[in-house]
Image 1 (cartoon, helix red, strand yellow):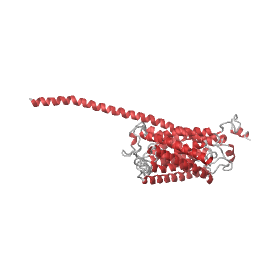
Image 2 (tube, helix red, strand yellow):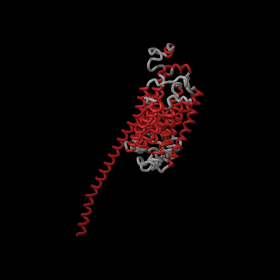
Image 3 (spheres, helix red, strand yellow):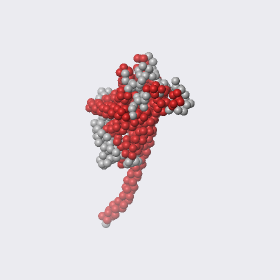
Image 4 (tube, one colour):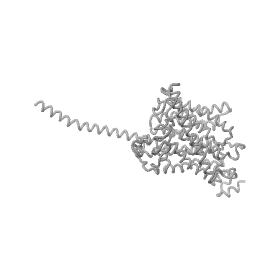
Length: 483
C-alpha cells in the first residue's frame, strides 16, 4: 500500500514539474532570443552610423585637399574625391566586395558574392562560405549587408587619398580610369589578405599582422601609390619655381574637422559592434589625434616661430593615420605616444620631400605613407591583450599595460613583413596601371590647360567666378576672356 502511494506521488509530482520545467526553458529561450535581437539591433544601428561617418570622411578629404590647391583647381580637386563615391560605390556592389571578402585563396576572394549574390540580412548564415567550415567574417551580430556597406566606405576613401599627390595636372578621364583599376587590382587583394578569413597577412588564418582599421590596407597602399604616381606623372609645370600657397585655409580646417569626426567611425566602427573594443578604439583615436596636433604645433612654434592653422590640421590628420593600425589594441597612454611619434616623423618627412624635389603636391606620402608605416610598426610595440584579447603582447606595453612589460618581439617582425608586402603590391601595381593608361589615353592635361586651370577645362565651371568671366556658359567663351 505504501509503495503504491509513493509511486502515485512521484508520478503526480513529475506531471506537475515537467510542464513547469518546459515553461521555464521556453521562457529562458525567449529571454535569450530577446537579448540576442536587442544586441543585433544595437550593433546594427551603431554600424550604420559608423558607415555614414566613414562616408563623410570622403567629402571631408575633398575639402581638406581642396583648400590646399590654387583656386582655379579647387573644383577638380573636390571632384577627385567625390567621384569615388560614385565609382567605388557601384563597383563595390558588382565585384569589389566579393573579391575582397568572399571565399577564395590566400591572395584574393572569389566571385561568389558578386552583384551581392547571397549577401542579405542574415546575421550568422553569411559567416559560412562555400564550405560549411569556411568562416569568412567575424561580425555575427550584424546583417551581412551592413558589414558589406561599412567596408564599402573604406574602399571609397582609400583611392581618393592618392589624388593629393597628383592634383592640378592629371586628366580627369585618366584619373577615373586609374581609380577604377586601382580599387579593383590593388585594394581588393590587400583587403582580402589582411581582413578576410584565410588571407595571407591577417589574424584569421594568415601571418597574424595587426591592422585594426587600415594602416596597410588604406594608408600605406594609397600613399606608396601616390608617391609612384607623382614620380611617373611628373611635377606641375610651375613646380618648384612658383610656390602654390593654400588658397583657402578655412577649407583645410573644415576638412580636418570632418576627418577627425569621421575617423571615430573609421576606427571605433572597426570593432564591428557597440562593445568595449569600440570604446578602446574611440579613446585611442582621439588621444592620438590630440597628441599629434599638439606635437606639430609645438614643433612649428619652436622651429619656425609661429604655430599655423595648416600645421595643427595636418598634425591631427597625421595622428589619426598613425593610430589606425593599432587603435583597438592599445591603451590611451600608448595612443598619445603613437600620435606624438608619428607627428614628429611626418613633420620632418615633409621637409625631406621638398629637398628630394618630388611634387607630391599635398604631402600624401609624408603624412599617410610615413604615418601609416610608423603606425603599423608601432602596432607591434604598443599593443596589449589587456584591452583586446585578439591583439598581441607588444614590445613595451604587452601583458599588463605597464611600461617595458612586453614579451612578443615576433609581432614586430610580422608587422614589418606586412608593410613590405603592401609596399611592393601597391607600388608595382600602380606603376603598371599608370603606364598602361599613359600608353592609351594619356595621363596629363595639355600644358596650356594646366596653366589656365583644370576647373574650367575639365569641368566647364569655376568655383568663385574670379579666374574667368563667371557669367559665360561655354568653356570657349570663358577662356576667350581669360587674357
